[in-house]
Amino acid sequence: MKVCSLSGPSGTGKSTSALVFAHKIGSKAIIDDGLLIVNGLKVAGISAKFEKNTITAVRRAIFSDDAHCEEVKKALGTYNVQSILLIGTSDKMTKSIAKRLALGPITTYYYVEDVRSQKEIQKARFIRETQGKHVMPIPYRQVEQNFFKRLVQKGKEIFSPKREKIGETTIVRPDFQQQYIAIEKQVYVQLIDYCCTQQEIVHKVEQVQFLLGEQAKANITLQLKLPINYALPERLYHVQEAVQASFYQHFGYELDAIHLHIKSVMLMRK
Image (cartoon, rainbow, N blue to C red):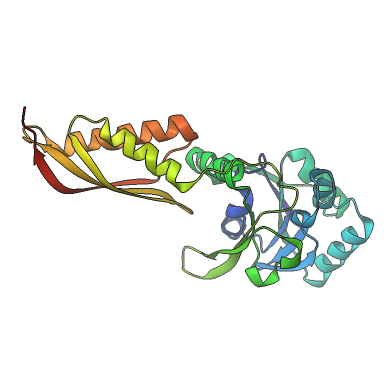
């Protein structure tokens, strides 16, 4: 069996990228947080995200429970798994999983930085810290919702470059995710509004629409001052740069898109 490892710190987006990356390297099977996933579907195991605290969650993820371990080992044989991707927080963890499941040695080690950009990692960490959201690379219908009292929602469908569906994701907030800092949407809007009003060419911010999901986007409608005796595209680019810098300073990650819309101009009288 070909065994590969993908590791990186918690909250960096490994599970979000798991289906696409496994498809890319030719692995039809994934071990993630105690689950065996084959062709995008959970076929055995119990998710560590069902646990009540982080200690039992880690034990579940590394198959410390003998009955859990034997169930997954049996399923590996039933589904004739020839190639598998093990996901963990470190090489030590994935080695431990490989040993418990009697998979043989890991042949290739990958790291979250190999599959996600620094910008994506920063955003994933921010979402984990401020919303407590975790991603499971299995369909919504396969998540046992009674385990999650606070949040279970559909993620997204995952497609290959050839537009072949390879799986789905589900977003959950486990019981052990007790600590996170909730930031209201209006906080982002107010920061963007304030940053724009500090720019010399801006008379008024008409509207700010902010979206934090798969991508973080801001749509900003501005009223500019007259006269416009400068290179407008260049000055608008400076506004975008200022918003991006302020956003990164306060929240630690960059926006994926900043769209500026000029609604009107205003003649300023002295």
